[in-house]
Image (cartoon, rainbow, N blue to C red; front, side, top):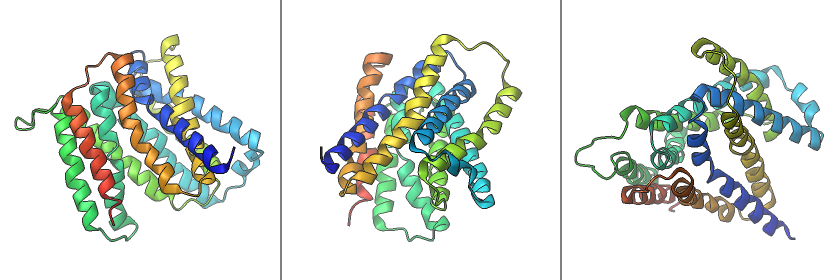
Length: 290
């Protein structure tokens, strides 16, 4: 099997797994609160990343970071997984999956806008066009097509879903300063996020024995969404000689996700969801215009 075919298979595997996580979030949140899901999924994800580093023979690099790199990991670990997933899980708790999932895809638009003041990049007309088109889709999805009434399914849920895109974009902007091996950096970030997650859990939740169904969901979320997907995507991008071809696979994910949401969650997919999602994807494609 040549390198390109391997890259395509790794990319497709990552996209397929990403397509299931919205359903996994909703199913898990039937048994866990957002902070409980974050706590247990984070444990599974950290364990997986640690095993990958052991297999690659890179675990020693975890202890060879500089002071600045450890400080950066504290900051990045606070942003994600702690703050980002806490906000995102709460949004999924409040919104139907078919709404929360497409709204989360607008993070790429937010990233391009935040890069202007934080990375001193220039904003182009394509980014303004992408902003207008994508957020028209956001309004259509959030109001279930009743755009004139501007009556949102859950104003707080929509706000949190959009706020999560800001946190995620900030995470990736500051992540550009990290020169470490990506898996090593992610593992250290997860380690440093654990005190934030555990502290918030102890302050806001009563201790209880986790239900088996919730643990199974947390294992899936932590293993695949937080861990394996990242590694598979990283391998795909490393093997390919055509980054654009692989990166375009990500546009399959939101549409595949709606299939899982329909069959596994039983949500009736609204026409407004398809229209809004199409506008969000169109907005993302606008950013690629030359």
